[in-house]
Image 1 (cartoon, rainbow, N blue to C red):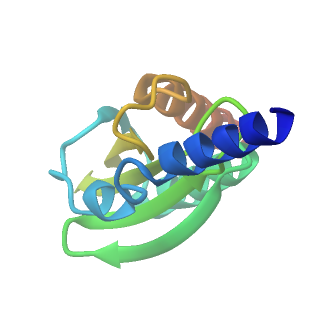
Image 2 (tube, rainbow, N blue to C red):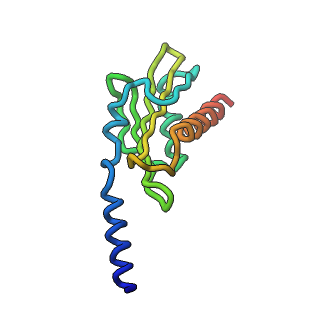
Length: 141
């Protein structure tokens, strides 16, 4: 009986893990450029790019892609699976407004369609922007 129960739990676990789409990295990367939460910085775009990369790395997120694209400088990141989440995928898009003004968009999606737990887009944006603010403020001291 115990072996049957363990087997049944394993089958259910594997079935549930197979449900849902692959991680949404492609949909995050190709989302509308203005998708997500934005913030303007009164700084040179190159400084903002460096601050964004450092902020993301400081949050222990994995940067999977970082390059200048037609729509701006794009950084793609992932947050690993944990006991409470299937993980998340996100994009930070940095666009130049003018010489010393830059707009940053943070957009993320959960890795499973019906995932309830995990980090929300608002939480990623708040953490990334806070880190960027700290980094840029230290530079001015």
